[in-house]
Image 1: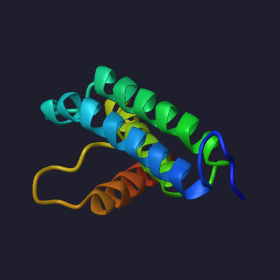
Image 2: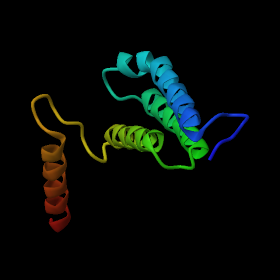
Image 3: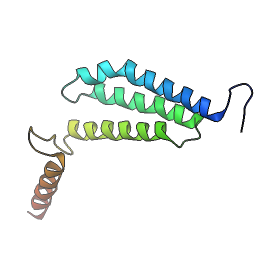
Length: 113
């Protein structure tokens, strides 16, 4: 399908990808400057995911931009969980999956009394 005002769909997808890349570059410094999770960082990641969602909507909601938005949103929610202490952060040298498993076992033991 060809749109005479905007060019072919591949051109539009490429332009949207370039906009997503510009958002990544603009927000990268803030995202990497924070070593520990903070609510400001969580909100920053949520904003980034929302911006990418809007671009993905222009792509009809499917594609690389939508996947990027979902990955960023997942990261923000994991950080929020760490901040609220629902799931503790992994100490250096320990994988997050191990921490989640230990946390679940500890919660189960506490519930059993």
